[in-house]
Image (cartoon, rainbow over all chains, first blue to last red; front, side, top):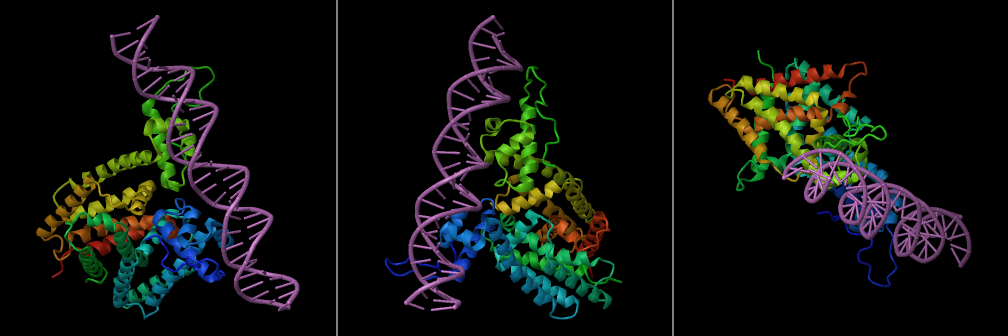
Length: 218
Length: 218
DNA sequence: TTTTTAATTGACCGGTCGGCCAGTTGACAC
DNA sequence: GTGTCAACTGGCCGACCGGTCAATTAAAAA
């Protein structure tokens, strides 16, 4: 679980062989190991020595490549953001604002979080750090989303008496908060029930609710 | 911010006076200081020495009263839960399940989080720890809420084709996730705008959306 | 080939952490 | 009073933390 999925830079070097160097792979191994540990236990609770062990690398090497624990964490955030932004932007640039686009975005975001629990933990850690840092890319993404909502409102596909921010943060929150407490919520149900079935029930219910509430009624 | 709001057990003892003892006040001072620090920086990032300083107490005394840092955190959680459960239970026991009860609960929960940012952070930390621990009281609360929803569904006040869990976790998530990222969200708006005004816009939008979506349509 | 650069190592450092312990002192029951 | 117990103190400890450094060596540049 906490062990890096990528091969060690120097996999169990058999005696005597000259050690090949691959700084790029080393960086990746460190980032992967650190990300898994940081998201699981938090940065404050993850000693660099542990990252080094999981990455198959010495502690000093981490400082060599990233300078400090803090800088390493920043780099991990940067990498995560890049992946996340790509997913979201691809959705929003697909077409003009419409009810259908909103629906697709909601389902896609839900599936995205469902498939990648690490992404959920990443967002939760961000909420904890709460440094108020809103990246430019991120702000752009929100603006884009809200612009799409306004388009759909102008076209009469979404009711116009709801602030776009409520619609955008609404569907994001409905998805994210579900997965933030997923494990605990599952305990409300019998052990025999398939968790993915509960997920599906929630998604379906929320879609009905949200998209009935979001369309105009005379 | 991090200093305990309650007076120190031995407030700047003026020379020579015999030191009065008040173990109950001491415990409270420690809990208050620790809670503020834990919620702000996290348990791993809060040294006991700092708690002692803020509480106006020696480090050893904390161990005397609570045994360990871990146990202190558990005690804080227990205290927080008690307060939270009281608020929620009072709402749900107010009357039979109805659309109006759901509306009141939603607004009350929103106001509760708005008035107490520490509560928001507490819940976010819980999501991070994710030990999957669901307290009996908490499970009861969910069951109670879902039972109320079913009553309202049976009475035809809520549409019956939505799983109760989606309605309950839905409105909780809409409120909580808003405040989890409140600071960041505010950066989307001009500096001149009153944050509480944005809160109000969001709440109003979400109420319209949620309660239009949640009622039956022929 | 020679020189330069950068990846990598292990030993090491000062500081801080959570926790312990021996001793002191107030509160309180008898 | 006097004995008992728990509240409270200051000093201490070993472990571990993030980070540094000089030395080694593979790889790239010359």
